[in-house]
Length: 431
Image (cartoon, rainbow, N blue to C red):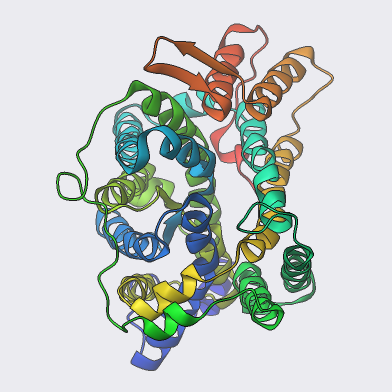
C-alpha cells in the first residue's frame, strides 16, 4: 500500500521540479490562496498588498523553521476579522499590530510547551465541544457584515445594483464549489471574485481610473512601528485578540494531521508540531511588523496538494516569491482596491457560512453527544455569548468581549463541569 502511494507521488517534498513545472505549479498555489488572503484585509480596511507580502514572507519563515519538511502556505486568518475591526475602531493600526504580535507570541509559547510536554494537555484544553462552537461563532458573528456589504452602497444606502452583484458573485462561487472538479474546484473564491468583478464593471460600479494611473512597481503602505506609528500598549487589545488564537491553533493542528495523511508522512513527529506551530507564530509576528493581518496555514493549498500529488516544498517557495512580487506591483494593488464591496460580500456569505458549518461538522464528526447536559450547556453558552457580543469591562483598559470572552468561558466550563471526556489527539481531526 505504501509503495502504491509512493508511485502516485508526482514530486516528493524534497524534490526540485523542472523550471516550467516549478513556475506553473507555484502559480497554481498562489491562485489557491489569493482570494481568501486578500479578502481578509479588504473586509477589515487593511492593505491587500501588504497581506500578500506578509503571507509570502511568513511562508518562507515557516518553511525555514520546519526545515523544509512541511509543504504549507500561510495566508490571512479569518478568525481575526471581527477582533481587527473592533480594535481598529478604538486603537487604530497600533492596536492591531500590537495584538497581532502578541498572538504570534502566544503561538510561540504554545510551541514551547508542546516541545516540552507533548500535545495531550492541549487536547484536554481544546476539545471539540469547545472549539466547534467557537468556530461557529466566527462565521455567524460575521453574517451581518456580509449582508450589509451586499445590500448597502458606499453611502450606506440600499442599492439594488449591489444586491444583484452580490447574488451573481455568490452564485458563481457556489457553482464552482459544487459542480466543478480538479484544481478549479479548489479556487471557488478566486473565480467568484473575478466573475463578480466582471459583472460589477458591466453594472457600472467600478472606477478603473486609479488602476490606469498606478505604477507597475510601487511601495505598499507599510505600517512599521516607530516609523509610521508609535506603538502603545492597551490591555483591551490583548483580551480582544489573544484569546482568539485558540481557534487557529486548533485549526493548525487539524491541518497538520490532514497534511500528514496527504503526503503519507507523520509531520506531527517530524519535524514536529512544535516547529510548525512556531513557524505559524513567527509568520504572524512578521505580519505585525509590516502591517499585515495574522497568518495561518491554508486548507485550500492542502486541497491542491491532494489533487496534484506534487508535494515539493519548492512550489511553496515559488508561490511565496510570487506573492511578495504581486504585493509590490502597484497595478495589482490598485486593481484590488477597486473590487466593490458587494463582490466581497457575495463570497463572504458563502465563506462565513462554511466557517460556521465547519464548527458544526467538527461536533458531528467527533460525535459530541448533546443528550448530555454538560455538552449542551458548554456549546449553548459559547454560542450566545459569542454571537450576542457579550462583554466584561473593568475600568477603561480591561475588556473581554464577543468571541474572546466566549472562548475563555467555554474553556473554563469544560474544566469545571464534571464528566469531562478524554479526547484522543489523533482521532479529533480525522477526516
